[in-house]
Amino acid sequence: MMNKSFIDKKILFFSVKLFNYENIIADKLRALGAEVDYYDERPSNSIFTKGIIRLKRNLYNVKISRYYNDILKDVKGKSYDYFFLIKGEVMPQYFIDEIIALNPEIILLYYTFDSFENNPNGVDILKNFHKKFSFDSKDSQMYNLTFRPLFFSDDYHKLISKDKVTYDLLFIGTAHSDRYVISEKVGKWCEKNNLKKFLFYYSPSRIVFLFFKFFDSSFKKFKYDKISFFSLTHKDIIELYQESKVVLDINHPNQKGLTMRVFEALGSGKKLITTNVDIKRYPFYNENNIYIIDRNSIKMNLEFFTTPFLEINEELYGRMSISGWLNELFFSDNFEWLNDDASCK
Image 1 (tube, one colour):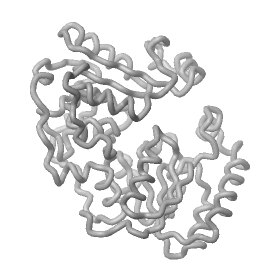
Image 2 (image 1 turned 135 degrees about the vertical axis):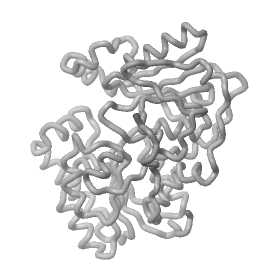
Image 3 (image 1 turned 45 degrees about the vertical axis):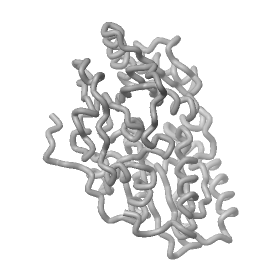
Image 4 (image 1 turned 90 degrees about the vertical axis):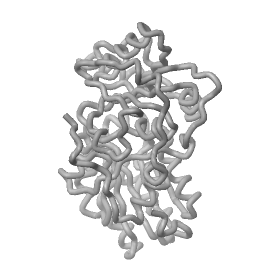
C-alpha cells in the first residue's frame, strides 16, 4: 500500500475545525515527509459564523472573500503538488481558480466526513477535483464520489488497557437526534446488569443547545444537567478508552457512513456496540467484536461483554489507520471496502 511517498510533496490543506482532527491530519502528513500549509476553511469558528454560513451564507460573502484573498497573498509565491480540501463548506470558486492558475500541475483532492444535506457549496465545487471521496456510501453513489471510510489516529493504536477496567461501557458524543434516548436506555440496562458505564454528551454552547431543545423535537428529552458545554481533551478521551471495555456508537439516523468513533474503538482494540447496521458490509465486521442494536427496539446481550476482543488482520488494520487513509486518498487506485453481499437488514 505504501508504494509512493509523501517525502518532499508540498500540500496546501484546508479543513473545517473538528475536535483537532484537522491538526492530527496535518501533523501526520508532515510525519510522512510532506510539507504542509494548513488553513481553516472557515473565516471564524464562532457559533454565529457557523450559523450564518449554514443558513444565509450570502450575508457573509464579503468576509469570506476578504479571508480567502488574504490566503492568496500568503501562498502566491509558493508552489504546491497537492490541494487537499475537507468538506468545502465555504470555499469560493474563484479561490480554487486562482490556486490552479498559480499551480497548473497541481492535483486536487476532496474528502468529506459529513453528508451533503447541509453543504450545498461542497456539491457546487466538486467539479474542480481530480479525486473525490466521501465517508458515506450513499452520498458516494449519489454524487459520483469514491467511497472511502474514516480512520483512527496513531494515539488509538492498540491501546493497552489499564490494570483494572473502570467502565464496561463508554459513550462520548455530540448531542443530536436520538442519541440521548438510546444511550440512556443502554445505560439503564447496564445498571440492571451490574455493569459500570460512562456517558458523555457534548454541545458547543448553551445557546445552541437551548435553541435545538426548543425547536427540535429530538432534543426534548435531553436533560440540561447532563450536557457538557466543554469538550473532552484528546488526552481525556484516550484515558477513558484505556479504562473501558466496550464503546457505544450511535450514528445520526440520516447517515450511513461509519463515525470516527467506530474506527477509534476498533483501532484501540475495544469492542463496539453500534446502531449502524451498515457496518455488516465492512471487511472488519466480526460478531465477536461488534454488536448491532436496533435504535427503535434495543436488545442487549450480556455475553458480549464477557468475551475478549479478537485481533483484526494486520493488513486491514493498517488500511483503517490514518496512514492507510492518507495513502489511499493520495496514491491508491484500490478502494474495495464494502461487501455488498452482506445482509444489512
